Amino acid sequence: MQFTIEVGRYNPEGRYADSAIPGEPFPPPWDRAVPRRYQTYVVELPEHAVVLDALIAIREQQDESLALRCACRSAICGSCAMWINGHAQLACKSKLREFTKNGKTRVEAPPSMPVIRDLVTDMTPFWRKHARVRPWLENKPLPAGPMEEYTVPNEAMEELLQEVSCISCGACLMDCESFAVNKDFLGPQALAKAYRYVADPRDARHRTRLAELSDRHGVWDCTHCYECVQQCPKGVAPLEQILKLRRLAVEAGFTDNPGARHARAFAASVEHSGRLNELTLMPKSVGLFNVVGQLKTLPSAINMARAGKLPPLKHTKIPGVKRIRAIFERVGGRPK
Amino acid sequence: MKVAFYSGCVSKGACPELYASAMKIAEPLGLELVELTQAPCTGAGVLSEQNPEVADALNGLILAMAEEIDADLMTICSTCQGVLAGHNHDLRRDPRRMEKVNAAIADQGFYYHGTTEVKHLLWMLVEDIGLERVAAAIRRKLAGLRIAPFYGCYILRPEEYLGLRERPERKTYLERLITLLGAEPVEYRGATKCCGFPMITFNRDVSLGMAGNHLLEAKERGADLLVTPCPLCHLNLDAQQPDAARVLKKKIDVPVLHLPQLLGLAFGMRPEELRLDHHVVPTKGVLEKVELKV
Image (cartoon, rainbow over all chains, first blue to last red; front, side, top):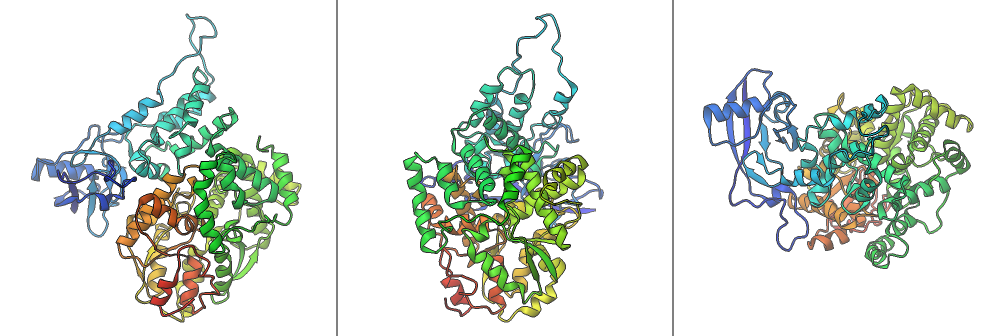
């Protein structure tokens, strides 16, 4: 079967999206930032071939200058994550047939990371984030003395199965929408990894980790867009681990930050009136005594008031709100 | 067609123009809206993060209310759609969770059997109402307008909650509708991206950077306006647009319409009926292009 592959090639004059253009505080979307050159190849391969087969065939038979990274070819090593038709995928796991759109497959380095050459992404930002969460166990003192083994219940390890499946391919970070404009964000992979240690009963740094993760660029920098859940080839579902971390951090008392204030104000509003109170949510999240923060939101409030879009000053409760309060009471989810 | 109508909080709060326009278009589409006025907030994913059991119970309650009416549950918000569909998906697959929910709502006289289907208006237009019926309601083609679709995360991801594996075409409905109404859909990356709204209260500049980038990209691709099925996206793309422009140091000025407003325009309704004057970014330019005045 014939497949047409369009490969994004190295362009020494191209700017890369990881460095914001001078004078612009945010990196713009990829195709505006980088004039990228695409080269088209036609390859003959069996119907069941994957994208990586095509790239290797191109390198071996047509163009030995094509640079790519791969190793295991079976979705275990995590080397070949790249952008295929605009989303991060493992090239070895993506069937050409499924990824042929308008008669071709477009393969390129992801826009959110620096590029070394062609399809070879510079993974430095990824590994820095990974290291920042100290991805190793720091044992509590052994309960039965230094010569004994540390036993944990099976269930505690089962809880971690999802997180330990991570192969560090970086697909989640490559498509992370928050990271696209916020390079300091720890990102989905590092945070899912962090949860793996936070939830391990043997780890001695539980509270310290939660404190660090509640800090700037940690769990509260996630925008909840589900791209990481969608792109992860191993079902790690990083967003779900981030949400668990947020909950544990709030439970551990790390609530003096806008993210935690937002979550609590939200819950309180639903419990009180059955619905969201948009008017008080913003100031409560920003922090009532954060004058600078409050002032920053003022222009948009004025714009909304002018357009007649400010929520009614008197927040109305839904009919039958008693029912909602009773459920909060009964299920015990009262915000602390 | 009878539907259990779930308005969501924002259409009754900061985006009253969404509620008004949704009510307007129901008649020409033959929709009989039975509004769930006693239904609570879904928790928008925030509640399920901090109080998962409560979020389960509240969503179970909403689903049970729709079940009593014996009609599909119609949402007009991508976020409500995603959260309700997510809880519905989980409850149907986990009998123990379902049991807990039913224990929590039993005192209130409700029981959820798991039969409710949650469908955004966008899906209903294509799958239940039918494009022929939509086409029959058109009184004024929106010819000459270039419209950029903006879906909102929760109507696209995760795919398994939303039935997108079985129905991948759901990811193209906005483009299909734009074409049907006589306008031209704009192709750009931002269409399926995050508007940044979930972080607007606690990570303001990042959130505005996201919204601004998508708006600018659509503008550079020649969009006259954006259309969205999600009022939360609308808040970040429209209400916060002047601030996003300030953060990006760029002029934007691209109006953003709610899906029912766009339909209403094509159905020949007057801009005031659709409350097109209640936007932060003026819609005047768009209306003039289709020879209308506010």
